[in-house]
Amino acid sequence: MTSFGSQRIKDEVILAARLLLVALFLIFGWSKLTHYAGTVAYMAQTGVPVPSVAALVAIAMEFFVSIALVLGIGTRPLAVLMGVYTLATAFLGHPYWTMTGAAQYANEINFYKNVSIIAGFFLLYVTGAGKYARNHDRRTTL
Picture 1 (spheres, rainbow, N blue to C red):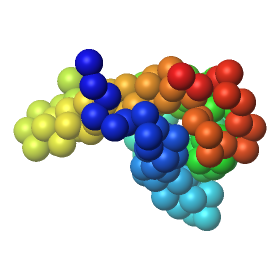
Picture 2: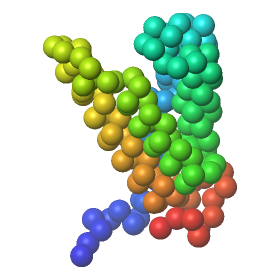
Picture 3: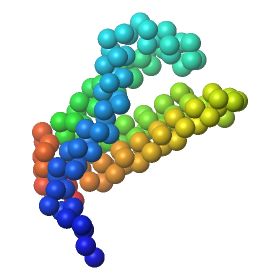
């Protein structure tokens, strides 16, 4: 069975995938970091428990863990952690089952986008960071 040339560019594709997978988290994590008070207010408005702590967790996960993943630091455990975080944000941030109309539809889409993102993190857990990583170790890649 052919790999369609994927073995030649495997490490480059893994690097691109790491960047693309966390782009959303970097952008919005930076926004949360630079607008902390607004982030806390938004989380309080949406009913997130302990909004000031939740905002700090969101900033740590979305911005700092994403930077580590881009750099390839602790890729496997952090990919699992981001998958779990993304699942939690799906349930907290997009409870479409409690809504009706357009809000239900929009939140259902976003909920299942989170599910797809989780799949990407789990694949990153399996593949590892690849060659282009700060703590590269050939034994940790496929």
